[in-house]
Image 1 (spheres, rainbow over the protein chains, first blue to last red):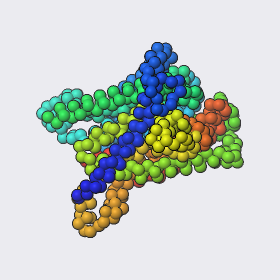
Image 2 (image 1 turned 30 degrees about the vertical axis):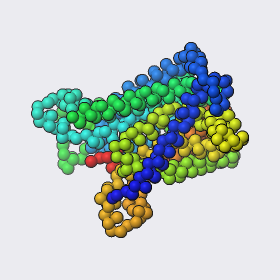
Image 3 (image 1 turned 120 degrees about the vertical axis):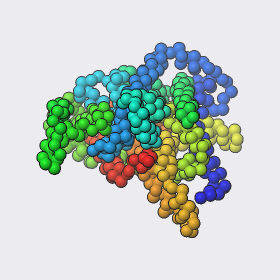
Image 4 (image 1 turned 60 degrees about the vertical axis):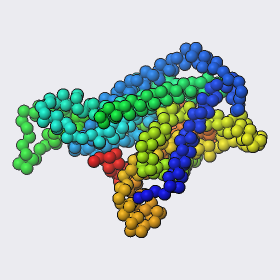
Length: 265
Length: 313
């Protein structure tokens, strides 16, 4: 079907508008972080980086940052392993109970996160575990592993199983097939799954809010300051969070495109 | 765990075909566990039971305990639920579910053209557009809502500043601290959650079907209503359901943008658990919310084929 030119333009500009809409608050945060005055007022003319200096010098912020990184890193590691196995069960094998499994693991995604966080807090207290960063890792995994399973599954649906069979026919052993055919082909999915795991954990607030105990993360710090009083360190840290996300998503994006290119050769 | 040990015991003698001797329950469970799919699913299932199933059961049990119980003892009672239905908690439920429904309705209309473009029109550009939509999603929602807070600040905010510089209007008022600003925040935060599943759904519409409908004289609107919408429905449903559920449970929007002008049910639950220190009451409020969400989710999920949506060949 030929789509008329004016409609393409209309859809294109509407999409561009939505993209812009998504970036407006991000631009606002970055802008506010360079404002010199103690209270934000737009437009402003005095630029400064002193809020960043203050942020980098703060030992408290360093603690929150290392908690965030630690939780995100461990979550990503577990999410890759659990997500890969879970996706195999989701896609590759036909087994009794698969349809129920496919829908069941989606339930934590289709669930109000703050309520899940509180339920987990209640559960930890009931079992006698004092919340710390490990409980936050578990909480994040409950929500993130299903998403990572979906991300890897979408890649796996496109996987041609006959490649594995061909390798077997050519005399490869089971682990050889796994190591030299299955994993390399699915690597983009696994890597993006890991990235998703880290990034979702890095930005999460509703689960962290109730499950980190004393090991608070950066989003928690920001929320605490926001409902308290304004300080220019909020936009400064916000901008750093944005920068980390930008670097990781751009890096991941180009790595995946490169891998796809190389694979296509 | 006893099932696993049974499966080990039985390995030497494989079960005879079921026609001759129908296998017993234990043997059937053991057989089920031996499927490679089950073995791969096992770690996820353990996570699911310990991190999702068990906490929910605890919440439900706590909701039947007397007010302000902390340890797990006390006789079961319905007093929490009686209080919920006799007091004004229903207002919070109505606000939460109402605002979530409105958010979904707005998002479905707003996202459809963009999703259509990404699935059908943009070609190789769509991967870049996807990336642009994806990136903000990873920035903590608190940071982004804070950005909108700066944007909407009365007098000193970005919007007020732009209007003052361009049009010279001094005071334009503000959206902040109103229910409208909460819905604004919800629409903003959950936009990608509708957009991406919708794109997957629209991508399932076969080109030749649309073409043949056009050849047979169908109008653009007829194609939209009778071909595109029904075929894309799984994606639309997943997107709508996802954003609805997340919006019902959102806690940041009403605090950061809404200035607590409306107390949502999630705020109420959080309040009972933290400041009020009344866990059974918080659990009862959560249980009702979970119940409503569960009914909606089961109803919608029952009519979904995930394999098709995710692209099984």
